[in-house]
Amino acid sequence: MNMNSAQARVIDPILSTHARGYRNAEFIGHRLFPIVEIPVRGMRVIRFDKTSFRKMNMRRAPGARTQRVQFGYASDPVALHQVALEGVVPWEHQEEAMKVPGINLAKNAVEDVLNMTALDREMEIAKLVLDATKYGANNKLTLAGADKWNDDASDPAKDIKEGKEQIRRRTGRYPNQLTLSPPVYNVLSEHPKIKEQFKYTSSDSITVEMLAKYFDVDEVIVGKAVYLEDSDDDDADAKDVWGTDAVLSFTSKRSDYRTPSFGYTYRLMGHPMVEKPYSERNIKSWVYPVTEDWSPEMTGMDAGFLFQSPI
Image (tube, rainbow, N blue to C red; front, top):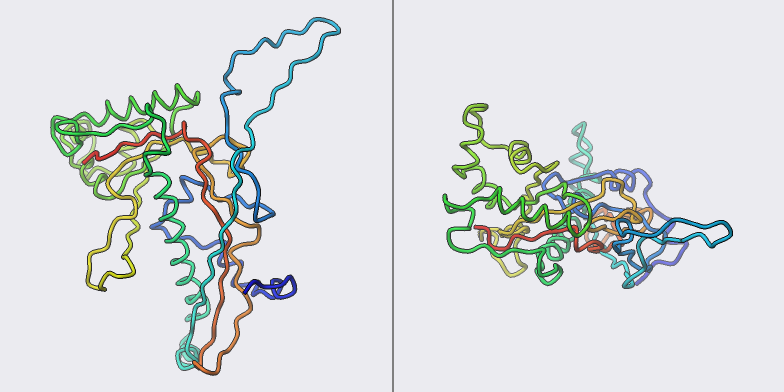
């Protein structure tokens, strides 16, 4: 049941402030699709055309009309979807925690909920980013045989360079991020051509900073998040959210949905919202409801390049 406006104002300001600043270091979705706050649950996605680098005749004769230009354009409608979950703290646990300084079970309960909702968002973003149908024919490459990066004869730097040039041809900008899953990162960190590059300058293992330097991108991001299906046993091996593909992208650092970028995560202003906790006698527990409205959107497909099956 949806809250009415009066109920919506009943929130816990301390826990909500904590929730808005909380980040799980294992999640990277917000680095590819920066979070931008919007005032309403429904709006239109602003996608970006090629206006900014189109050659135009801007010369004006006296008395003539001045040329006009509009950047970006409204495209498909976006409707935020709501996720809501309640963290539960039994009265007995709360009583025990009060005897030990520094333990805040309310904050812990909210963080546990935030981790679950953040994993859901991470998987939604990864699903978009790794969907080959979202990319143009020249903005993706499927690697096979000796071209796979786990083959010593492969040349990852050449592949990355070609992907960078394609993004530049389509957007006028070089990508600033290379996103890898741990299996792909592990392969690249052991690639003989990459290790050869650093053998005289460092005795350390290949790091993400070294890979960024090698591939000439601002940063290499490794998506470490894993997940289990609802039907999986607890002792089952978790799966990598970011699969075994790799993605080059240009992502704006301004967190402004009016700036061309690979994508954005639209989130309702003021969310996540931690509602006022309540005590439920039937389960003898305190309950901490958390609500968040958001939607990830790929707004600049040309600003991404997908490497499929690199290992």
